[in-house]
View (cartoon, rainbow, N blue to C red):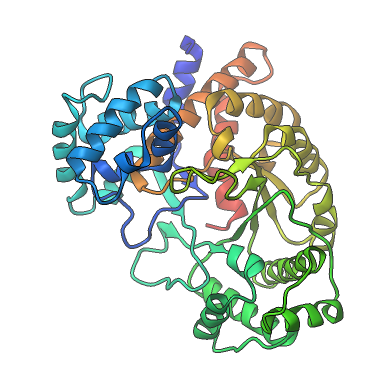
Length: 423
């Protein structure tokens, strides 16, 4: 980085961030050990992609066998930013001194990690070092929201099962247990979904979220049109592709209704093709399609003009489209850098465009998407470096002063998340 970027980064590091999306487990935020950290899907995916067999990463293997095999293969992708995450994590959390993880040094690292991870209040220490105040969770509608500090680990209602698997026995049983409502028609489905929102809202949830596939069809469906579709689905009758799309969209609009009633923003994550690779490792079968578009969501954004929608995409081809929707729609916000776009090359390109085109109040800078709280540190630091480089360019071009650049950084990392999600 340039000296200006370094200077900005030093100040940006001091801004306490809000992480608005993660998969951190509320009752056990930390990894159990080095093996679990290295089992993060990024590493197993990349190792498998470049030759490591699945049986060499099997759950049944000992730590010695699995970690040794994975570390050896990681040398093939030590050029990646993902590899950089684990090294930075190890250095800043476990006092690792080396540049690379190797057969010779992983065992001492595992021992140091085990000692730290077993410590009292370790998760709080991680957030202190990462300078993150709050981490949003991903909670299924059946999940209990007790037993953890909801002021730090903020509940978020994940709605995928409600929309995509409405009539499955597990979903119906879960709704009955959560709300006491037995779903038998549209009226009771509405009642059950409202009950879920009431439970989550009453326990500090600050948003709902859903991942929408490229083929998802977002269109308004009248209750009278949805009633026979729901009845057939509940009776186990097959629906056509068009009927399935209609029922899913109807339920999706019910979710938006819940967000409106309970004043919760909705996080839309658009574009993942689920289960596309038959031979992939666990959590490593999803890909991206370039066919998704925000065009079909215009009715949703218009109809629910009083609901805040924060939008992330998986394909960079949607970058300009999201920029225009954030520009025009008051209730649409560009959010983070999701999954396959979560690398500096894509982040910085998007950041340049967003900062140059959009009000700073419309931008949500970053979320970790982390499964273990330890990964919040290197991921946010990666983003802070990207932000520092992009803002340094703006200062060098005389578009912003250094003070103004830092105000933009504060808006993206902290001020906007706190305001938009009311935390």
